[in-house]
Amino acid sequence: MHPLLIVTLVATAVYLTSCAFHPYMKCKQCNRSKESHSTTFKGAFGKCRTCNGVGHHVRWGARVLGRKS
Image (cartoon, rainbow, N blue to C red; front, side, top):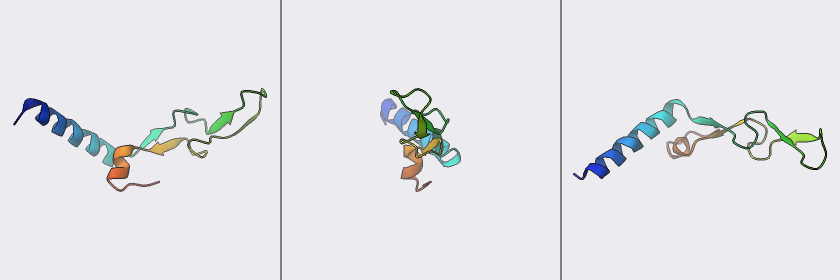
């Protein structure tokens, strides 16, 4: 087998194993604050639209494995 193929298969297996044990990642938009702050009105905020106010997302690999929030 080609060494690059072996490295790719091992990296994929490690990633999917990691997703099985740790299926969530923090929301990059709100950084787990669960709030979206207004750029126009200082002090105004609401629920983060990206994560819907939960502060985290299901990782792509966890979705592939069938883990849903």
